[in-house]
Length: 181
Image 1 (cartoon, one colour):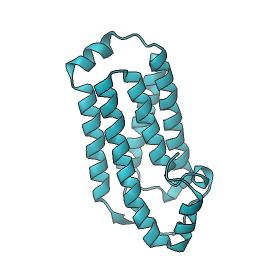
Image 2 (cartoon, rainbow, N blue to C red):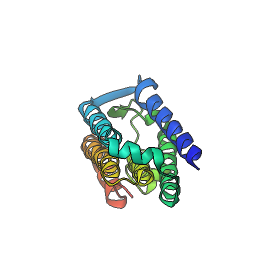
Image 3 (spheres, rainbow, N blue to C red):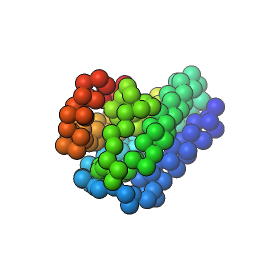
Image 4 (cartoon, rainbow, N blue to C red):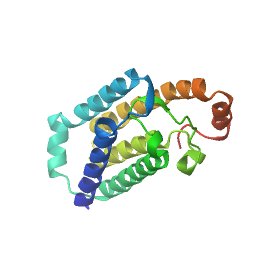
């Protein structure tokens, strides 16, 4: 089961590196970039604060992969799957920077039918799964709370931009959907 955890993590990291760093964004008009850097800072800070302390690393090296780790791996897998499906649904409309594709269209199908930010929801769930796998209170706190704060902040910034871009159409969409699960 430990190998499954690592396979899911490497798939997740690879997907996010591709989406944030390597994916071509030529068809998007960027509205805002600052939140991406704030989000990245909070995520990396959370990860570093979680894995750097020796108390975490000594527990991590010696702990058997037990029930919490199995549950955490399942939660991680669910989060990564939600992220993956939401990115597939957005397709050409996905961009690492907040902005609108030149073919301005509000995507409201797939997971977006119920949740306005399923991609961020998937990331928050995935980090929660990692926190469960860690089963170390300070490490689990940092690896869960700081990334969650980052994605909540990013969603708030994105909501403002989408309201400006789509106006009444987005306001109506907001009324019938939830921001996160």
